[in-house]
Image (cartoon, rainbow, N blue to C red; front, side, top):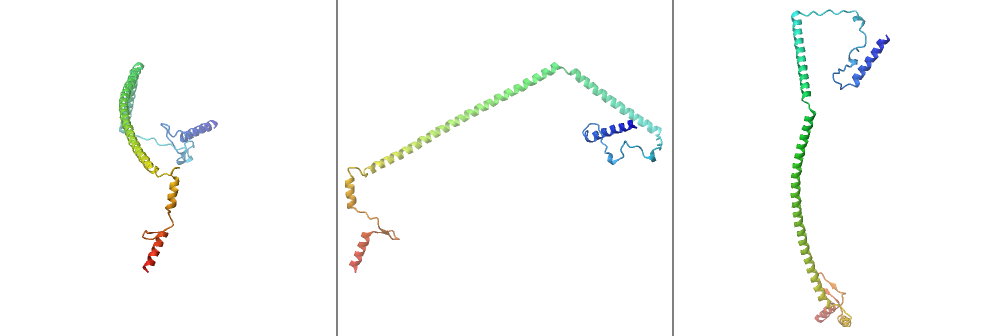
Length: 219
C-alpha cells in the first residue's frame, strides 16, 4: 500500500510537471484530468470483474493488416538506413583543413569586395570634396566682391557727407564771426509766434497788423 501510494504521488508530480512546465516539450501529450477520469483512480465496481470479449478479426483482414504493417516497417527501416548513410557520408566529407581553407577563401573574397567598395567610396568622396571646395571658392569670391561693392558705396556716402559738411562748415559760428552773427540776429528778429489757417497761410503779428491796416483804409 505504501509503495502504491508513493508511485501514485510520483505519477501525479510527473503529470503536474508535464501539464504546467513542459507545455512546449516535444512528443508530450497534455491530458486535462478535469474533463475525464484520472488514470490513477481504480476502475468502477460495476466494471471490476468485467471481461472484454476477444475481437475476432477475419483472416483476410488480418493478412491485409499484417501486409500493411510489414510495408510500414520496411519503409521506416529503409528511411532510417538512408538517413544513417547520409550522416556517415557527411562525416567522411568533413575535413578540418578543407573547412579552414574554405573559411579563409571566403574571408579573402569578402575582404576583396570590401576593398573595392572602399575604393569606390573614396573616389566618390574625393569628387564630392573637390566639388564642395570649388563651390566654396566661388562663394568666397562672391562674398569678397559683394563686400568690395558695399565698401565702395559706403566710401561714396562718406565722401558725400564730408563734402556736405565742408559746405556747411562755412556757416559755422567761429570765434572770429560770433560778433557779426549776434548783430545779424538782433537786426533780423524772427518771431515764431504765428498761426496757420486751414489753407496753410501763416499769420504772424506783422501780417495781422498789415491786414488790420488794409481794412481800415478800405473803410
